[in-house]
Length: 186
Image 1 (cartoon, rainbow, N blue to C red):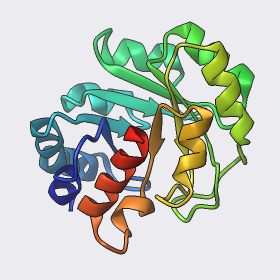
Image 2 (cartoon, rainbow, N blue to C red):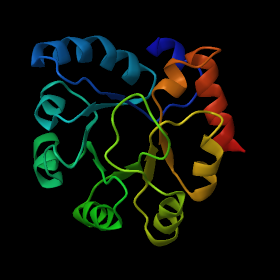
Image 3 (cartoon, one colour):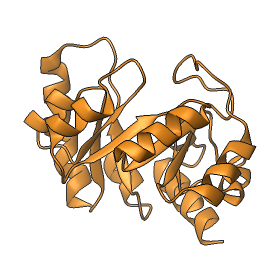
Image 4 (spheres, helix red, strand yellow):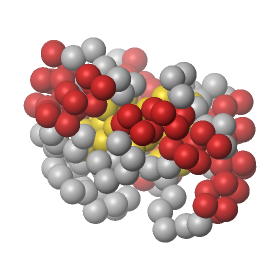
């Protein structure tokens, strides 16, 4: 499925998000999926675990507010790796992460999602404010589909974090990626 999705066009990054599994299961998944993503020119980001991201040759790590702090994540993965930070719906958390050096910040959830139980509901105005004020790229997260993505892009989302919107797309993952890319190009 990952190869199929990546065949749909530009994918900036793929985030491996595995909860409640062993470190060995994460290692096995990374060993299978990381080379596929990297061969397509897509950054491979590991969720939550800067230690394993560094160990496994990932291109970066995404940390939530309950995971490692930005400084700890940066120290683990090094200065050349990507470090993204979840900021929920908080301007304050986003400014702190941006000032600390995060490569991107993530806001959400913007829409209802089945991927996880969101801690917050983010308002689209948050994307406009960030885009007008800051240079650090922002990622919109939460329940994003081809149908609801345009409002996020128009508001200033630099990237979209999409799970079911790709993997459960009625025409398959490749079609979903093509459609999302067309939205950004429009």
